[in-house]
Amino acid sequence: MVAANGDAMPTALRALSADEAAKLSALRRTKFIATGALVVCVAIFALAKSLQGRWPWLGFVAAFAEAATIGGLADWYAVVALFQRPLGLPIPHTAIIPSNQNRIADNLGRFIESNFLAPEPVRQKLKEVDFAALVADWLSDRQRAEGLSVFVGRLVPQMLQAIEGSGLRDFATRRMLERIGKVEVAPLVAELLTAFTEDRRHQRLLDEFTKIIGNFLSDEQALAVLREKIREELPSVFNLFRADAYLLKRIVASAATLLEDVRGDPDHPLRGEFDQFVHGFIDQLRHSPDYARRAEQLKRNFLARPELRGLAQDVWKSMRGFIEQDVASPNSMTRRHLTSLFVEVGQNLARDPDIRADMNAGFVVALASFVESQKSGVSGFISEQVKRWDLGQLTRLIEINIGRDLQYIRFNGMLIGGLAGLALYSLELLVLAN
Image (cartoon, rainbow, N blue to C red; front, side, top):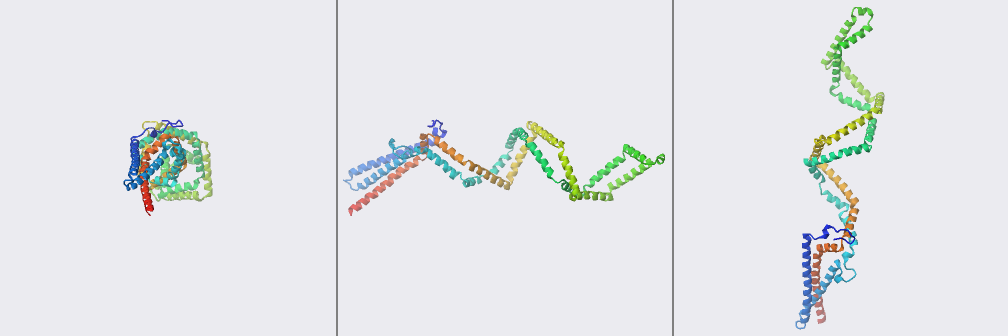
């Protein structure tokens, strides 16, 4: 069926479902019984009225039947007037629902907006849902996590392209360099060295240094160069007696002995001197303005070098190439890590009630704000949909769902009317008897 404005009617209004067919059958049955009861009241009234002269007590029956007939007719009119014009007559204030379709549509939309989409009821309803638990259960399923990682993997190249095209990469590089530029280098280095010197771990440097010097003193080429330097410094007469070889031998032997003593003695005085040097250097870094100024100058010179920005670009290109190649691979390491990450997030979320509570609170705020911003649109949508419904179909839909209950008004009208008529007839007799 097509609505008056040419739009196709909703499927729910085109054809009756099995449930609606059953409701329509019950409605017709109730209508038939109500109409039959009205006809019975008319027949009883006519019969009682005709026999009232012979049997006066039938006056009570006639009064009941007469008032019941009037009440039944009045309620029949009221029920029919809701959906159509009684007997097709153009009586004012009839066919109420079809005549007020637009107003009903607008009021229905406003009613739903005000009562069902109000902020407090929406928040209370959202609080009943454990969104975080649903997310945790979903992510904990490895098959779903794999599907999510595949989906994210497909988006990675577009994300990287968007980052590069938007200038976000250059912005991030500048911000990173700016943040590094604000860091005070000297105190930071002092703290790092302090952590490094705990338990005298810096003494390992001295051990390595002694090994390097020992290797140097055992190298023939190095010794030859050292001997040549000694020959240059000694007078010529000493070289005639090969004093350079004697001095070199004594220097090497003394140095080797010293280095061996240092390596074998954890409390050697040279180690103490090294401790004092390191701690003094750390103290200068922490408190000396001159050291701080030099460190800041070195930092600025380093950050100002163009090679640093080129290095950042090279790192980005290498990382992007690796990621794009990996996500395209059937055995992508990135997707495997993403899958494990999603599963772990789901499991941790399921175990942590505090995080779930925070997430649920966030969901409530976000969804409630979304509903609040969109509820006027929902109201308008409902109103427009109701306005587009065909009048006949709309009337049929409402009548099918509430018409059977309305028919009981006719029964009630006949009963209440009959009792009222009976009471009035009795009162009339009492007044006339006096």
